[in-house]
Length: 377
Ligand SMILES: *Cc1c(COP(=O)(O)O)cnc(C)c1O
Image 1 (cartoon, protein in one colour):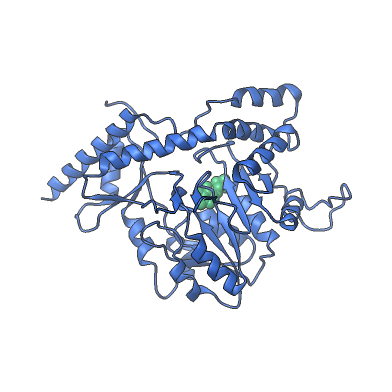
Image 2 (cartoon, rainbow, N blue to C red; image 1 turned 90 degrees about the horizontal axis):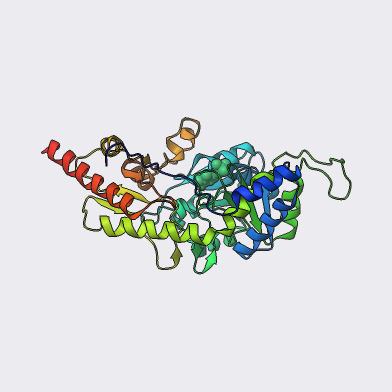
């Protein structure tokens, strides 16, 4: 098996991607209008069961548009989980607002509803919920707090296409949902993003903001400062082809995760993000947690796997550990996110992995663990 390399993520272009992209080139519809934009938006709205789906150029921009459309500005506060990809907090910062960082819940690793209330102030405008690694957050509990304080909810579903909370597609439960189609996400357009909402006024506002602020009734009249946050027809062509096969992409990831769970269930040193009974997990990246107190460094284990041709990643560094957000630490600290960040490893997860790959990864993991533990003893 030596000499092989298993990346942590890889796109699978197994459908009409080439045909649709070639169609853009042959018809010269390569910029940000064209039939693939319309078809991708319509198909994505149908996939989520939502009224409006709006393309944009990436998932970060989708968050920025959602926040602007909801009126977030300087002086406002927005609650975000500290354990997330940096874009969630950055989008709040772009608005001149302050991300208020909240710790994770230990089982699903998502925003802990029990800790939100204490972070609400008169400046709080809303909450960004992240469905981390594809597992939905506890939306009912979060909704209750949001309604009580009159806060909006944005669902950052960048990692959770097709995940469900109590049978509801994620992204459609809050006021606005945002998705990413970066190359390592569940489906990809290269770079790309989508916003979904059932709110007509919000959809209109988002459409105006992403199109340089142009007045929808009067071409080339710009009554507000807008942005060029549009997606190209070429990216949408890729997205439509990917979306046509999304059931396959989703099934394959669930299968890969099941293989991991089967192979690792007897390995005492390792646990993983739980799948709650009310959740349909999208398994963007299967992530394990080394048990604490086994006297083995997470980074040494990652290095050992790398030597066997297996790429892994550390779990996200929580926002409060990053230099620009360090000053936003709350007095109580973030014990759960800190522990996850110390012990978490992202294992290769993508639709093209075979059973043989997963067995090899798990066998290497077992051997590396045994080797490391023997070195200590
Ligand atoms: C990937 C990701 C984003 C940003 O998406 P881009 O398309 O890379 O800009 C935002 N939030 C989360 C949680 C992500 O994983």
